[in-house]
Image (cartoon, rainbow, N blue to C red):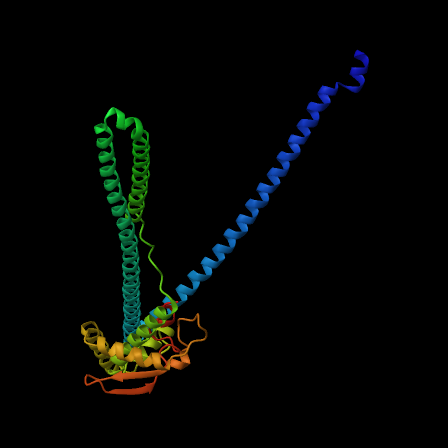
Length: 343
């Protein structure tokens, strides 16, 4: 037997060797998977480095271009004007976005207050109806208790002979009254629990705006965007402000140093008067109404009007007189209005 074991080996030893081979196999497979994952991560990092190097190179190219413009006496003043206009454009975009957000919050709060008012009225009506039922049950309990006490006194006052003939029916009536009282008390308790549940109800969540409300907001946003255009157009810089947000520095020549200084003065004056201007709320409302009369929408679920249908600019003076011209504020995306619209 020992000789056979020496020749063919022990089955238990073979099993252990097989397990070790399997373990080595799986370890090798896991290592290969880990290596493949690391190689993939390496390639991804290399791609990101290339992208970052490309972005850095483009930024450096822009800086070199800007430096070249600034050292050129014929262009240095143009660079200043360009960035003043671009800064003004960004201020207008933020002003419009802030106006849109405040308007949206006001409308949402107004709608939520309306929902809460309706909810409270419904809760009050429901509670009042149940309170009336509870009062009726309370009155019933009181009447039944009075009747029960009267019957108990009558039973007590009965003589032995009378109690013999009428006592059983009197006791039955007393038991019946006691059962009615218990039932009425339980019903009153349930009604009071319902009232408590109504009082402790959680108010409805903040409601979002529906399509008509969003359309109304968007018309006001467009009206305000037109107001900004009209304000800067008075000093002839509305179009230049927009161009500065779309083109790169050096793409626009604003003229000589003297012309640039004049333009800078108009930019400063326009920016200052923009911040002080407040008396145009009525004009905004009136303009939004007129825009609503001409606005068309792609479908019933669209909140943003089709740009081509609201391309009329309405100028409203202090006397309420209206003059219109063709300036497609939405279509040309003045003040970044496309991303400010409520959708």
